[in-house]
Image (cartoon, rainbow, N blue to C red; front, side, top):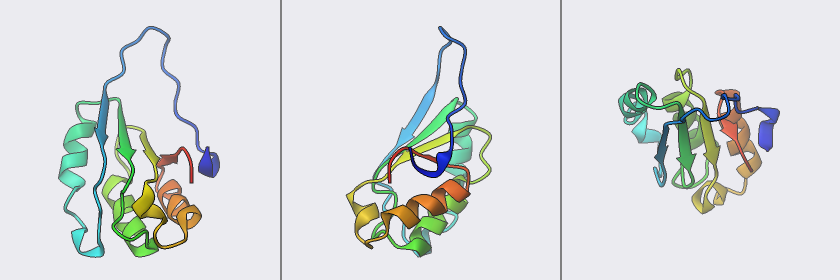
Length: 108
């Protein structure tokens, strides 16, 4: 698990509501585009899963936009990187940007 973050534990046998989204392909110009969606999902879920291709080209600028969209949500945010998040050749740094925003990145 990247970044050393931990997913909070829930009681055994409890229901967990997961909101999941993938293939966002965020670009710099998308700042603010997804925040309301993520806030609404956080109000109805226990965890938000970001399932790959979070960025369009795997740039740090795009990763910062994603981080801004999900940072500070009232539920844990868990992510895995997709092939587009590796295109910039810096998946570790993309993962670190997300982790710095509180995202649990399962693998860089």
